[in-house]
Structure formats: C-alpha cells, structure tokens
Image (cartoon, rainbow over all chains, first blue to last red):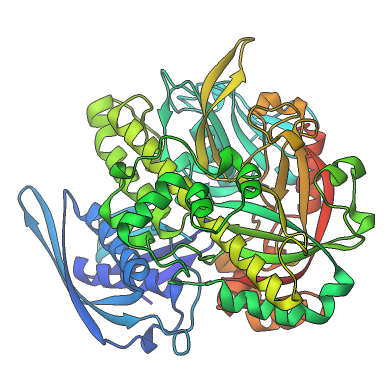
Length: 143
Length: 486
C-alpha cells in the first residue's frame, strides 16, 4: 500500500504517509490519498475531462504542497474530482517546475461515495524527503 | 496519559506550563480544564499551546480551552492576545475555516408540534441547504457581486432581502468586520468561493433541530432573557458553518506568503511552520488582517443566507410566516478569528489582537458592542456538542477577564477521524440515532461515522469546566431531534 492514513498525529484533521520509488509516483500517491479523503471509491471517477497544470516552486516539498492544494482548488472552483495521469518534476531557474495532466469529472453524488471535504494542506508535521528506496511524504489535511 | 510532569495545578480548573517548559516561551501556557479533562488531553495540546507561548508579542498567557485538542499551529481551543505594536498575526492562530461559527435561532413551536412533521422538515432542510463535498450555493453571484459580499458581510444580505435588522444586531460586530478589502484577496480565493454562498460544507458542519426541555434549564432568568422559555419544550435551530473555500484559500495564500517573508524579511524564527506569522504592523500582516476580515464577512453572509433558507423551509412546512413561528436569532458567534479588542492587562485597558482558534468570545455583562438586550446578561455563547449528545447555551461572565473573555467552542474530539471511521459505521449510526429520537440526513456515511458522539469529549464536563473556571455560565442544555450533515 503506497499510502496510509494515520490516527496518531492528528485528531480533527486527516494525516497520511505516502511513499514511492520516484518523486513522480510519490506525487501520484499523495494525490490519491488526498482525493480519497473526499471520495471513497476513486475507481468510480471517470476521466471525462483533462487539464494541464504547471507549478513552480523553490523546492520539491513546496511543489507537492502546491500540487495537493491545486486539486483541492479545482474541487471547489469547478466541482472537479481530479487525479494525475502524468506528472513530471524537473529543476528550472534555481527551483523546480511541475507539469501534470489531471483527469477526472464533476462530482456525481449518485456514483461517487462522498466522504469529508478537505479545506487545505497544513504545514503541521509536513515533510517530503528522499529515503533509501525512494521518496516519502507526511501530510496533514485540514478537513 | 500525556500530561507533562512540568504541568502545575493552579486551581481545580487551571493548569499551567511554566516558561521554563520550553525554550523560547515568553509567557506561561494555561489549560482550562477539569482534572479528568486535562488527563485525557492529546499530547499535541501541550506541545502546541506551549509553541503558541513563543510567538512574538504574546501577552499574559497562551490559553487552551477545555474542549482543546490537537490542531495545527495552535491547538483547537487556542487563545492568544498579542500586543499589536510588537506582536504578530498568524493564520495558524485563526484556522483555515476563517469565522467558522455557530448560530442559534428560536421558534415558538413545541416539540409536540414539530414531531409529526420532523421527517418532512429535516428532509426539506436537507434538500434546500446544500451540504457535502463540492456543494454549490443557492445564491448565484458574479465575481464582482461576491466582492461586495466579502466586503459587507451580513449587510449585503440585508440589502438583498436575506436578513432583517434584528439578525444583524444579534451577530457579532453586526455581521461585518470593518476594514475588509477584497483587493487583498487572490483571484483564486474568489474563484474558489463565489459559488458557495449558502452552503453548509461537511466535516463537523451541520444544522440541527433541538428541544429546550424545562428540566434542562439551569439559569431561568438568563434563559428568559435569551428567549428560550417562550413555550415548554421549545424547538430551536442551531447551525455551524464557515467561510468555505474562499476562507480556506485566503488562509493558504497567506500561510505561504508568511513562510516566505517571516524569517528572510523579519527575522522571526518559529518552532512549527504552521505558526507562520508576520508582524501585525507589517504590509503582509495588515494585508492578511484585511483579507481575513473578507473571509469573516463571507462566513457571516453564508450563515445569514442559510438562516433565510431555514425560515423559508419552516414557513413552508408549518404554513405560517417566519414571524408567526417566532424564527428569531439568539446570537451568532465566531470561532476562528483575530480581532482588535480592548482588555485590561497590568491595570490599564489597551488594545490587543486576540487570536481565537476554535474558541468563542464570551463578553461579560456590559461588554463593549453587545446588543442592548444582552447588556445585563452578558453575551450568549453557543456550544455545539456532538450530533448525538446535545449542545449548550451559555452566557459570558465578568470573571473571564484573565482569558480575554473567551470560552470553549464545542465538545472537542478525543478520537481521530481515522479511528472513528474504523470504529463506527455511518449507516448503522443513522439507524441507532433514529431509534433514540434523532433523525439525521447526510451526504456521506463515512463523514457521519467520523462525527459519532463517542469520538468527542463529554460536553457536560466541558461546559461545567468553563463555568467552574468563571469563563461562561450554563443557561440551558439543548437536546437534538433532527440533524442535517454534510
């Protein structure tokens, strides 16, 4: 299991650890962990719409922070449940740039088993680090 | 047990971590709680309240209320008053859901009158008040209209037929924080929130139908003054929601801004990045203060248009006008704000920037800005319990000065959402609650399970602790019979 929710570091909020061999896969897993807080059956989210995002940050850690917040933004602004289909992270201009293709569809309460809304990614215990066998992140979401 | 050895007992309800507890603490940290509640507190509360005590400009004490639990930055239940001259403003001391708050509304209906129509009433409320993830509001607005909403709060609602003068009078600050300037909020925040006016949200946000039973009135004179004794077994409506995606985006935007300038520009070092802050009198601090006020006003307007809809639903179901049904607001209280208020510290009254994160202002009798009808009683304080176990109406007390006239805001969690979801099943909980006389509708059984009563502290103990500590006085206990949840 490439991500796991934790009850030991947050009570009112939702905490998870995610891990993966590459940074790109880690972004994928963290995105799934974030979206599953809101939709239990992510497999039911159809790739009806696609959009591209480009984000720039000074390091990979803040890039993940922005990326997860971007998914939360589209949920509110366009009622879109999105998951990444392609992610690339590369150094650029003294920082890092992320390009991602997101696909998904509008919330459909008949098919999507809804959970709890996510308000934001918090900085509490927030961490993205390179570990022996890849990358690992700890994220606490405000719900 | 998580209680640190350094925690000193000051009285039956006050516990203190001295400045020697952690490097950098500028004032002691105080936890208001009974011995039982303090023993059951999360380790995170002690860590976080002592972190708050390190923030520049903090005055007197960093406080945590009896419903306190693990948050981010500040604990939920946190209170910190800063000297505006030397102190900071911190989004982590306010929360992402800026001005998440509660509203209590009276009716002159009795439980006996409501019971036969309870299902119809709850179903209609559920259909008419958007709830859950991604819900869209029933007030359709253009971006520019939304800028007016966030600048004017409940006043916009009054101009547009969603409020009465009395509603505004019964809302903290008249339903509008002055100085809200939409030029300090991002396009992204507007984009995220403009279609959410009139939405309840999810998580611990709800709208509940409750009964005031005569045996649950603790202070009859105050209950009278607050309008709680119009009829026996009076039905009241309590609801809880905030500034929705708009406020969340404002908080995220400024958290990031403060992280980028705090150390580099202002040489402020903090122990937890979630306590990111800026000097109150810096350009960034002032911009956030103004943007935060926009989010405060969005939340007031959101609760106001929801009240309008509640009036419509009750009117439809009971074939009577809102006035005939006595649908009148007791008060609206804010939970997640920072406000400039006058308090006496070391004798003289001065202005302080009071951060309240998951805690409630509880003005005493004669408190500045209270509506005339509450000058003698003190501010009504609305404490929402879990959906299974009941809620309270309290009143502010003169003895609350030391805690900057602040009290608890709810029952406070004891179990993580993750644990609660593993322990309870939403559909079973819904059936069990119905057998116990509480009809609940929800978009999410997962979300319902997370809000099970057993995941929360005992509300009776929490409010008893606030009364013993002299922060707020119990007026009445309110028992749920119907609930809609996001």
